[in-house]
Length: 312
Image 1 (cartoon, helix red, strand yellow):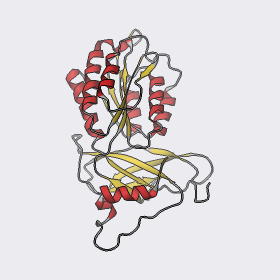
Image 2 (cartoon, one colour; image 1 turned 180 degrees about the horizontal axis):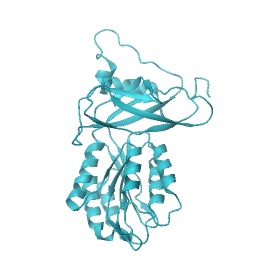
Image 3 (spheres, one colour; image 1 turned 90 degrees about the vertical axis):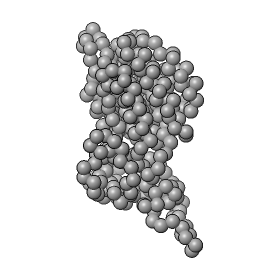
Image 4 (cartoon, one colour; image 1 turned 180 degrees about the vertical axis):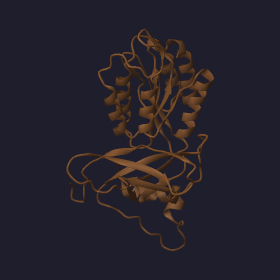
């Protein structure tokens, strides 16, 4: 669950998606947006729509979408079709298992950061048996480059711990957010488990993008754990890439960057959950037409007891 003020979402819809909010203001007295004495719980979704070749499809309107919460259609509170800034953690594997591809990782990461749009913020992290983050989310390219240069192949791969810590860094971010992971997908020695990672991803509301490297270990030889990388990406509405060379690696980073800036953002006030405590609720986003297109979004959220004007 996210928290957003309903009056703000109404204003955003009017300014950014006239198709959803109706005709613009004329000469007559404008209608005042509804106001509530307290914030209400809302579900915000970042939705990607592509054609069969993976290309983003622009120009869709609010009535092109249908959002189902536990199978029940929901009325959208806001719909934004224009580009909105994104906050992203770029998590880079610097363990000994990916020593041979380290330069490609650094080159692609620098290219990704350099092409982020105005208003985007990023945090660089690299990991081996521990994760090292930059000072904080920033637009400062020099700071990002300095962090990327610090990478050295060393020690084992505590991937699960690094993923959980990265998602925790994104937890306070209330606007659009994403995690870009560059790793062979193998874990050696983390305190966290695979299930811990998947649970953290479900709770984070961040879109996770993974770029799979080919790593090496004495136990598995040359390998990439595609299963984990695909699962964590698909469960959050993100995407997994498995490039075979440096050119494809650079292209994968470019695709991620382009997709982060090519999303529809929409939200709704969910129905009140029955029973106490939080519950997992499945969400599905469909198109009302254009059946040949592909839609991706996160698969659900944890509900919380909702508050009324006088509290819980």
